[in-house]
Every structure is written in C-alpha cells, then in structure tokens.
Image (cartoon, rainbow, N blue to C red):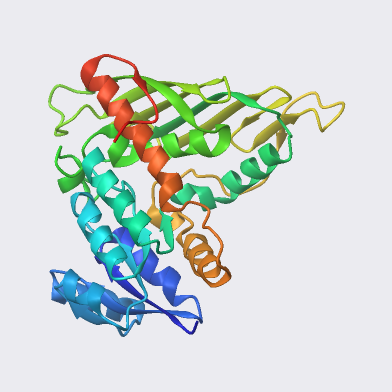
Amino acid sequence: MGTLRFAVVGTGWVAGEYLKAISKRADAEVVAVVSQNEEHAKSRLAELGIGARISASYEDTVKSSDVDAVVLCSMPGSRPEQAVLAAQHGKHLVIEKPLAMDRAGLWSMANALEKHPVHTVVSFVLRWNPSFANTKALIDDDAIGRVYMAQIDYWHHVGPQYGQYRWSKTLAQGGSSILSAGCHAVDAVRYFAGDITEVTAYSCRTWADSDYEFDPNAIAIFKLKNGGVGKVSSSLECKTPYKFNVHLLGEKGAIMNNQLFSHKLPGQKDYAVIPTILPDSGDVSHHPFVEEIDDFVVSLRNGTTTRCDFFDAYKSMEVSFAIDESIATGKSVTLPLAK
C-alpha cells in the first residue's frame, strides 16, 4: 500500500485537527475536502498549507478512485447515511462521535459494515490520551484488580463561546447531554471496567431560560458485566472549569485520574502521582487526534484493529441510547439492545 489518501468531510474546528494530523504523516495525504462553503474551505486549506480539491458533493467524492479513506466530521444526523455509502464503495472510515442520533441510524451503519468490512476508527478520542493509556496499562497489568466501581464525569460549559453551540443545543443535532458529549464518559467506563448490562438514568435543567432544547445535565447508574457498578454524569451548563474525572475502585487498589494506590507498591501510604497529560481541556487542539490517526494508518497497514473500531464504539453508543431511553421512560434498560 502506498500513500493513504483521505477525504475529510467538513472544515470546522474538529475537522481542522484531522487535517493537521493527516498532514503530519509522510505516508498519508488529504486529497479532497467536502464542504458546502467553498470560500471557507479554501481559506482553511491555505492556512494549513494543504493542496486538496474542494467538492460540495459527498457522493462524488466517496466514489472517487483516488480516495482510500473518509473522515466524517459532518453533522451528526448525516453520519449514518454517509458511512453506509462509504462502506459500499470500499472506503475506510474515521468517524466522529456520536456515530448516529438514533438506534436506526446506528443499526444501518452496523449492517453496512458487516456486509462491507472496511477498516474503521471512531473518535472516542480520549482513548489515545496519555493518562488514559497509563490507566488502561495499569488495569491490564492487574495494578488494581477487577474494577468493581467506576465513576466518570464529563463537566463542560458548552455555551455561545463555541461555534458548535448553534446546532449542538438543538434536539435534532445535539440530541441529549449524553449524545452531545457525555458519551465520552460512557465509553471511558466501558474502556476501563468492561461492558454494561443495565442502565438507570435521570436528567434535569440548569436554568429556566436555558437555550438547550434538551436537559443539559444527566446522571446514569450502571450494572457492569463483571458484577460491579458504574456511574457517569454529564453537564453541559456547569459553572466550573472543564473536568473529566476518572475514579476507579478495584479489588487490589484504586485510581483517581493520574493518582494510583496499588497492591503492587508495598508500603504505600498514600496515592502516588503519575506525571502525565490529563484530559483536562475541552479545546479540541488538546485532544490526541494525531495519535488516533497514527493508530488508524498503522493498524490498516498491519491488518490489526484500531484502539476503538466501529463495533467497539457501537457498544458505547448502545449504552448512550439506553441512558436516554431510561430518562424518557423512567425505567431501567437492559443491554444489549435488540435490533
């Protein structure tokens, strides 16, 4: 395989990070950008020094013989249809979260990728964060034993200061506190503690005059497949700096963000601090898109699975939809969901 040729759909904040990440690799290049705003796209590509063509037609781009992989930074509601078309044309996929805005969209993607098995990575991007990598390595090395309690929080005031707010506050494109952003915390519970078998969840408003079309705050309690329990909270209208808290209790120790208490450190009297990069910023330039793209390209060339392929991320999305169903019905939801 020669140079891997990408088409990036969108030219927004997140798309810009993918454009940078792809350009950093000598064995990859951006050959096309799909945008309805040609002037903005030209300006963005000139700013980044990328000489890709610009097209308003996703269909024409995905059919092109000089495109090997597609990065979907499109609006959330359009991703299922776009992913299906890409898979049908044999294009490998990098997909932003949320994968879909409803179960039907998620299932259509799964069916297409089962029939047309292209290489995939889903941007639950914190899986490539250094602190996450440390925590996962410690768990895999039995530093804290079986995780019987996992508590993870996504607290981020997403207001008018962000360009995405104009659409992410809507029910059609934001969907819920979990679909909009809290799904990162859901995925983190699964990544560290394993699969989730039951969900009970609640939500609330913050202020009476909120512009959000859905409750921007949610809490969900989980039953874990390993016999333990979990909890996530998601707040998009919080009066606090950005926080992504990771608290894990295991049979042989505990982890709080970058702090470790472990049976492997005999004589330990207090938590040891691991100097690392924490997931402590909502700025997408802080997120490890370079590492995600590196994983995607290397795993494609080696015939291995990415750190978060579609069918792994699918389970996190199932849980996310179950949270919203539990909030809507006031009932617990058992997983996996039936198609």
